[in-house]
Image (cartoon, rainbow, N blue to C red):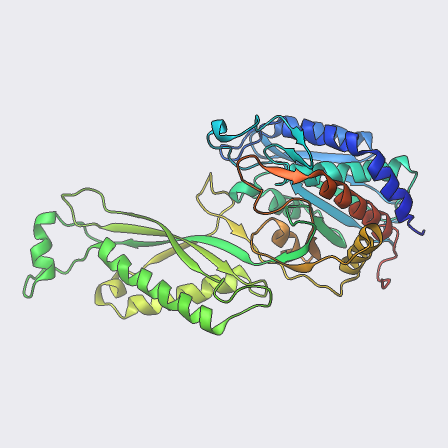
Length: 428
């Protein structure tokens, strides 16, 4: 079935008011994360919206008060035609002091050429435009032979496992588009993982014994965990410099792969030698790296550093990596994503962009991270493609260009109609 991009374009332009109204409705739900646990109402709204479009839906709690919603529109010939996931998160960044805002953060305000409100760029704009794209295809009578899946997930802003939960629940497809903030660029990304490195002394000593621990002949074999952590931090800096010299990835400035000692916690009281110290690190890595391999590199290096110290050799550092929530367990993972420009799905997305907007898209790498890596890691070819600029996400007076919302809707609608009506394995 040939896709009429001109008709889709005209239909999108005619639905500008409908798109703005839907986005305004989504913005009115204050789904700020943290504190989170506040998305049930907006997810119920999206669930009902999908059901009105003929989707079968699945809603389940990832955390109490924070459910995922997945809608599936079964195609006419699912076995032989391509399936597609559209993924977006409903949580939004913290507002901060709303007195700094020119408008109420949760009441969408139109001021040409922008619409303002918390989440318009990151990323309720992408969700609203995606839903309108699906709705207009239905209204135009466009039938899909492959399955279309819409994932409305929670927790992306604080590294919670909304998209990971979809993967673990068995949801998959031949291609996926995460409609997060990308300025209409088609993107992959590097990855991020956090971890805790902890030094724990086997013994606890009073502050009065410090003299015997640091001077010749003192006879007390002990150490401050805080001071020993200085060696661990030095070791991490050494490894970070080594990575900067030996690793690179096209599209990233050299040295983007960093190890940040973000938080340190140590000691129990001024009257004691610190018997425990924990360091919270944030690690950025490149798209061609997996976080499990990165973890191994760090642990091997720091273990070697510890073995060179007589005390650390007997009191080695312990490692805890990642987590499913920065709120619940103070840890997160964002897997990296390499983008395959030659994959038929990526080619179809590029083709829809060119036919809808009459110029070529930018294909590259995001300097930020989102949930796309979880889909890619599950073996689903994935790209990030959405409206909004990164500098507007999380900002005071968050905004997105209305024109960009419309352009995104055109491209996505054309892509859905094309991809879900293309036979599996057929070249673009």
